[in-house]
Amino acid sequence: MRSRGRKGGDKIVSGKGSISAVLIIFCLTATLFAVVPTRSSGTNYDPWSDINGDGKVDILDIFSVARAFGTSGDATKPVVIAGYGTVENLTSFTLLNQTLVNVTVSTAGYRMITLSLYAQSKDAHQFEIFWGYKIAGKFAYSTTQTLTSDSSIHVVKPIWYQNVRTPTFVVTLEITFSEFWLSINNNSPDQYLSGYVACSLNT
Image 1: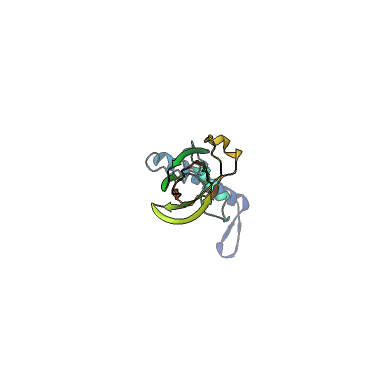
Image 2 (image 1 turned 60 degrees about the vertical axis):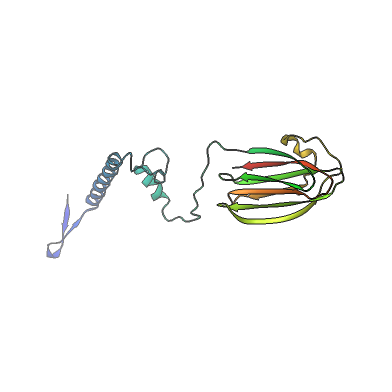
């Protein structure tokens, strides 16, 4: 390694010497990172630290973090729930005079809910619905609405035919709660109320 003399005996390392020193440090660091995962594999593995998702935490994950150094944004981590897609269910009901039915839907693990109510009676009388949602078993929102059913009674149709007539009531919500509930109260003194509740959950 060549050097140039200076007054007082000081020396300046040449450019080639600096590059060699940097390469040696890099090789030692890379070797260290390659050995560490082998020693800590198994019980210490943290999937959140596995940036590229290859089942091991190594220098490639550190490289991914280094490449993103200095960036900023929303810290929320998106989670994809495997095995879920669109789930639909149908609840039919026939209410005698002054009776009610409760429909409860668990929304955990889903992103959107669409709930439609179809109701019919002979005299198209008014009836009440109570709906809302809960978070951890406690009421977070609830409301009451008065509706009027159609004047003719149809045969209850399966959910895939729900678009043949306009719902009596429909609501679409982004899920920020753990449970959705709907109560239907037939307050007629002499007429029954029939129909169905169609619910669609999306991830």
